[in-house]
Length: 301
Image: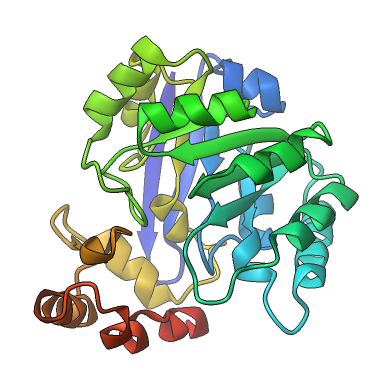
């Protein structure tokens, strides 16, 4: 029996304490990864650093370092190496690295990132975004366990053929990039259970023990959570952001980048409203919104 207690406070944000009263859930996810609870902390830009990943892993889940956040100039891939080594000092439990493939101005050093992951002995990688074939093949050559996050069952089937060991089915409910198909988890998970030959976890709009139970009932082997972990004391973001997340209503998000076919769910604030207004006036013109969505203020927080 699992219950979730939520502690609110201006300093602590939202602290998750999962209490296992009578049993520990064993699923294909926990058995494959050697973790205690079927919960993954998904990759998040400027959030997925060693401190958060280690805290999740120490609590029995799977913590994830976000490669594209860390492996940036001037140190590049060596910064990722340092972050992985830091995480090893903070936990002796399994943790992974997220490699996201998204359209960006300057392509990341994916070969360098993979090289560091392999050399540092990371056993688990979460991939996401565009066609992951080359990344998955490179990882599987070194026996790395790959969890691919995608928003459609047909994409999941393709990833499985490429060699993905597990799928993270990402419903339209998710924060970040929900894809362009607008299918929520209630439908997506049911379809995945019927059509996928590889195991999967539920990703998107999940934050409670009840939702974990629902995901398991629908055929998933666990949860991938992102936003909820942003509101923990270990998340390296400003307390005001954490407070906004805790206090938010279910209607306090919106979508941008729809005209670019790269939809992103974001917090509904004045900046998001400005971006949506410009997008409506100049659809498809990324240059018109670039300065508003570069993420510099978020990074500084």
